[in-house]
Every structure is written in structure tokens, then in C-alpha cells.
Image: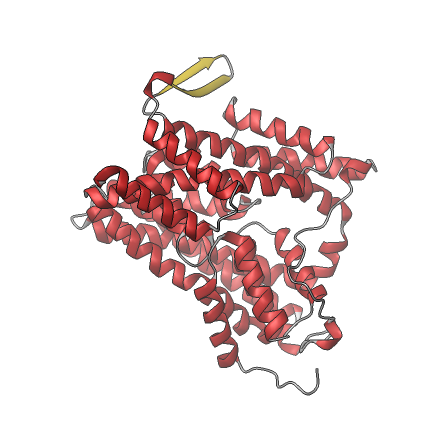
Length: 451
């Protein structure tokens, strides 16, 4: 659009700050906010380019909404634009989760705080189940994808197979299916761009040219990607060398692995976190995981910001520092750093090859299979959460390779079960939004404890 002035980096930063402040409700809500402001209101890019960018970001590990913001920032202003967009998108969440983590650590056992989080846990169960259904509708397009989802659920729920192994197996199945020409493994698309009108790329500010400018050249992007990898790994390597037995080293290495293998969004990541942070390291209890997810659901920014809370609680309890709250803050910020620093590297390394990646049918089929597997993983997460919230006691059943956590039926928490049912009705029957459901559940939790 020749008649529209190209925004300066400062003007773009104001827009990204506004988007960040409005980005509630998980990736679907965040992507909708970006589309409304960037495509419909600002007309900076067209619908096809927006969807193209989103499909590219879905091929990458990490939070797709944050990476979409980073990539669009790169399209607009190169490396500086990517940094501004990506950092501003997560900054409100970093501040909010850090503040809530501190409150939780200091006053989490205080009656009214505990009562509010009791209500939030029930609402989070409904929200996770909603995510399973939404993801399943998009990913399980045929019997082959359904079989992959079922197999992944059995693998993680009954066999305790590690999440990376499930991802790897699913990707190999998808790649092999596409290579064999099987129709079931034809790569599908990603999200559809929301909105009722279609803005052509030629009518947008960026236009439809694939050549975006000298500051977006391949060499510049690669150099920036190299710096991102260096900034990501430098503290990890330093901790491994100088403090190999520290909880901070465990946080840095554990969440770095997550950053490389987090296909499928925040809910898939939480299934792995539940295995590691709760089961292996013992940083926090299952109910506390739900408390952290409730924080992330009610604050702006990516849902994966819940990992900051996990890092905070782990360092708070394990560091052994004379100032545990300071240790928690360091652990939380370290978890955030190693989670998001790689996201910038993936964008910078992948952006120059976006078209080639999108046209690679075998890669697309592999990612489609991974997405199908993630449905089973997130279903496992929903069941795992429900077992630990609705029942007060859990027993472990071991039979050869099978290891299951099952509830002790007589230990059911009637109030938690009733509140979970109410949350499910609110989400699926009355189609209430996430903020309303969370606020209502927290309020009911307070009434049950003090009414």
C-alpha cells in the first residue's frame, strides 16, 4: 500500500506492547488478537502472509504465538524488530508470573489464597480437556492419526515412555508414511486465520513480494541466530561446568531439553513437566502444577510461562540459599531464559527458508503425526490432573512394563468433583470464556471455604 507510511520501530513497539497486554486465553486467543490488530486494523500484512507465517511457526518447537510475533517483527524490521516483538510479547507474563509466584510462596497456605487456587484447579481441568477436543478436531483427520494418538496415550499413561521418544516415533511414522505415498499422511494445514474478511497481500503494507529488504538477508538472520544460541547455551554450559549438582543446573538442562522438543504447545509440554519436575525432581506437587497453570491462564502472554513458576518453586525449595525467595526468582528467570532464547534462534535460522519448509510434504506429514501424538499426550495430562485434584489418595500399580497411577475411589473430594463438573458445564454447555470461568471458579472456591 503505497499510501500508507511504514511504521518506525518505536511505533511498532507500541503496537506489540498493546498486543502483549491483550494476549490472554492461550495461543488461539493470542493469535486472534494479533490477526485483528496487525491484519484487520493496521493492515501491515495480508491474510495469506499471516497464515503462511503461522504455518511456518507451527513447524518449530516452542510457543507458536510468541514465535509468530517474533517472525512478523522480523518481516517488518529485521532482527531488531524480531527482538522487540518477541521480548515485548512475553514481558507482561514474565512480570505477572514472577509476582504471583512470590505471593504464592509467601501466602500460598493462607486460607483465602488456598481457597482461590482450589477453585482455579477445577477450572483448569475443564480448560485442558477443551484443549484436547480442539486439538483432536484439527489433528485427527483419519484413522491413522487417531491410531497415533491412541498409541501415544498408552505409551505415556501406561508405559511411562518419555515425551521426546513419543515425539520422535510419531515424526518417523509421519515421514515414512509420506515417503511411501500413503494418503493418510498427506500434510494438512495449520490454523485458519480468524476474521470474516480477506485482506490480500498486495493490499497490505508489506505487499506480496518475497524479497523483504537487505536487513532481512540470510547472512544477517544466521548471525542473529548464532548469537541467540550463544546467549541460550552460555549459562547452561557455565552451570554444568561450575555447579553440576546444583538445582539451577537441573533447571537449565531440563528446560533446555523442553525448548528443543516442545512440539504441540504448552499443554504437551506440561505432560513432560509432570513427568520430570513432579515425578523425577520433586520440585512441586501435582496440585501446585495446576496452581501454576491457573496463573498462566489468568495473565497475559504464552501459557508456557507456567514453566517460570515451576523453576521458581524448584529453586525456592532445593537451592539451599539463605534467601529462598531470591533463589526462587533466579530459578524462575533461568527457566524463562532457556525456554525463550531458543525461540529466537529457530526464527532467525528458519526464516530465510520459510517457503522451502512449507513446501516439504514429508516434513509436513511428520509434524502432522507429531500433532496427532500430542492429542494423546494432552489427554494423559487431563487425566493425570483430574486424578490428583478430584481424589485425595492415589495408588501406583506396577505390572511388568505397565505402571499406572490410579485413584483410590473412596478418597474422592466431593467439592472438587462438583466444582470440576460446574467448570465443564460452563466451558462446553454455556461456551464461557476462559477469564470468566477462572474468575467464577476462584469465587466459588472462596465461597466453599468461607461461605
